[in-house]
Image (cartoon, rainbow, N blue to C red; front, side, top):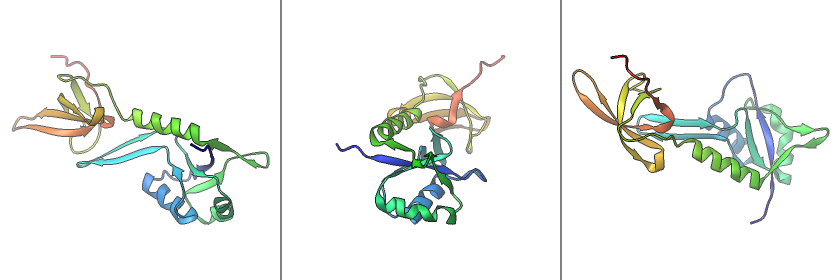
Length: 170
């Protein structure tokens, strides 16, 4: 497999931007180019599972066409600059990008065990506690049983939106 380089684009720090905005800006500026945004973003049921590996940056494959488009970088609001050292662009090789992609993928999996008490951090069950009843999708989705006074619910919750519940003081 041939190795190639990626340019490092710094995101504008004026406001936090979503994955989809970064992706749209890359496609608008550079067209269909190989890129890596170090943010995982997936819709699981009514939840959005996300994990940020490297905040504030995106990577685009370094090609002559991409370098030509860099002159227009200031015309959009998502990116502030391309990282440089002296008068040369900083790059990351494709092997390092592959390592980052693997790290991002593994950051989505949390280690929970069936029967463990967990707390939901976001979404419609935010702040509620429940019990892990199964682990699916290689650890990315956790089936949680949540008991309320009126009923008992079982919901798939992204592992990134759960944490171990603190011991009850009962």
